[in-house]
Length: 117
Image (cartoon, rainbow, N blue to C red; front, side, top):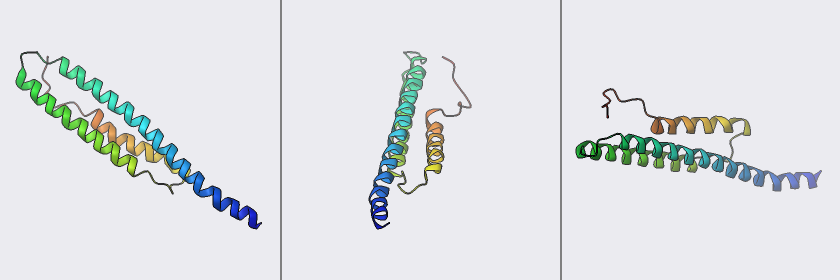
C-alpha cells in the first residue's frame, strides 16, 4: 500500500507537467494557424489598395502592425497562463476561450465604412 502511494506521488506531478506541456503545444499550434490567417488577410487587403494611394497604404500598414502586435501579445500571455492544476475535463474550454480571444483579433468585424478597391 505504501509503495503504491509513493509511486502515485512520483507519477502524478510528472503527468500533470506533461498535460500542461501538451496543452501549451496545442495552443501554440492554434496560435500559429491564427498568425498565418492574419498575415494572409492582411496581404489580401494590402493588395486591394491602389499602388498610388500612399496615404491609405500607410494607414493600413500601421493598422496591420497594431493587429500583429495585439495577436502576438495575446498569444504570449495565453501560453504563460496555461494552468498546471486545471482538471483535464476543463482543458478544451481553456483552449476555446483562448481561441475566441484571438479570433477577435484575426477576424475583426467588418469596418462600418469599407472603401472599395
